[in-house]
Length: 366
Ligand SMILES: [Zn+2]
Ligand SMILES: [Zn+2]
Image (cartoon, rainbow, N blue to C red; front, top):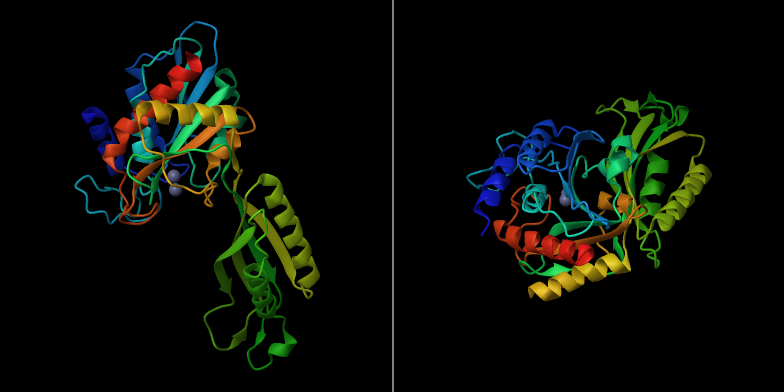
């Protein structure tokens, strides 16, 4: 039992910060890392990112292990004694636990090559991993292998699931602004309402064929007109999230939807902006094999999980730059779901999480 790491997680849990605003969390992590005497410590990476590098000074691969700094803008209702002290925010995805697991690796020097512990910002919005990759300070830390875990409610506690190939979906948020012209509610035919177009769009999205690329679209938000009875609306905004199993399938979905909108705009002005873009995560066969070998040698059960995971994970952005593997660590069959107000990361996962990464590291650098 890692009592110190459990205490560290609870301290992080009390002070959740949303994506892009993880200043206090980053400071806390950097201080704890500094005490483990890394060969280098980089702060302010792609925003509030922190990375510690432990160098064996022997030639070998650079192995990066990643955790996330951010929490969610959801009020916590877990009832735990160390619950959020920041109103409106909560560590409801377990990133506090992922950080505690990484801290369990701090100070470990591999036999060969280097270990990089990366605490990345803004995972929930999909911006963080790409910001890390774009930061010139990351060049000196470029990994050959990159590993990450996510805890997974609904999967047996402490079980591990990994597979080569697609691990999580690509996704992108579209903000669709529709402009027509307002009119007196008694003469709607003299204006141009976005309503008929939006009704058609809603139907079209729900009826998208479920092909092999599992492309889908979810209407998340719709706002039209003003709450009056005297005005026929002229303006509307819709938020739609598009998902598919690969980056290329997502591009096809975006292209097709753009075409459909252009063909059905009925003279309305339609402006689309893209937000929260996540790459698909593609597990490299070699990296996934290291994870599976580690699970087997530690005697952990194989988790029942159907790959890929439909939600997105911005760890996918690293797939194009290193041999990556994202694996899932079961949080318990009846555990509250991720992003549920009652969710809390199970402390029992810290020990197997640390052991998995230690085993992976010693296999890759052994
Ligand atoms: Zn999340
Ligand atoms: Zn998460």
